[in-house]
Image (cartoon, rainbow, N blue to C red; front, top):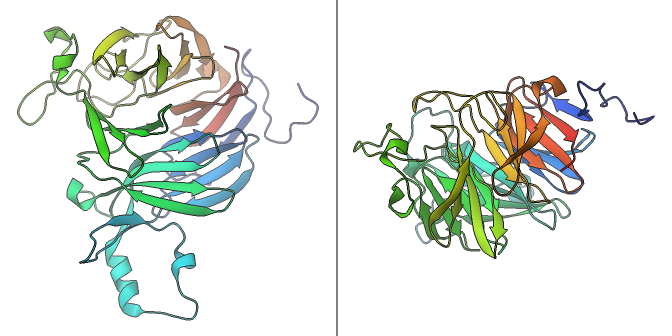
Length: 365
């Protein structure tokens, strides 16, 4: 054990030693997404109307920025946006009660979203805002947008997502070509730099995918049609022979399907329900809780890392979906893993749901 790792260093639970743990209720309020850069860990939660906190890998708080969604009402240009720095847009010594009241009426809070950290360290939140305090609302009342924050300059740029977003944004990834892909209800949309949806991979109607009727999810939509992928969809990205490949979480049978986006086919699938190696624990009912596989990512060695909520462990698979080992288990101190990311220096960062905290473990590929 290193001589001095500070108060955040913990005794090992197993051969995989946890090096850092931070958070719990006093620091996070319903956290739902994480992102990792070379030096920092970012956590998005629902405090206020939504915020992102930045920490070092030792768990030391660095900074925070708010995700305050604001729906702009303008006859000349009907656009939606986000204001993460309200004080910077307020003219000094000027107050306007009407504008303030209008601001309050139009305020939104974070409904859903995902964090991306690009190669230059810019933090990108892709998500939607919903009417504050409302449990029931429609997609028309929500504001989908991309909020890009530069920690070096503390400046943010806001891009409205144009195109139909019918459900919560459950995941988003940066593609090798620099574009952003996001997961909508049973679809993965590709966005251009202006935030416009240019193409969509439809996961609800599997005509382009060789699926048998037995694998079709019976929950269906309003018309009673089935789906072989039930939302919320979690996905990650890697390239194979210069083609973009998406390992996508499937919720009914606890499997992960790997999709070739160019050929519109399922390359292969791996995982199943169970307690064994490479299996995920959960329920086979479409109406049951979303317990497996909860999140996934690809590390710098091309291994697919999957968080298994029901079995309380993190799996490692190779590019062909073959189980390699457990990266972290309950015996290592893991509790309720809902999100997982890896760093470039061989650490896995796990966000736990209840109680809410972040754990960081070293691992070998």
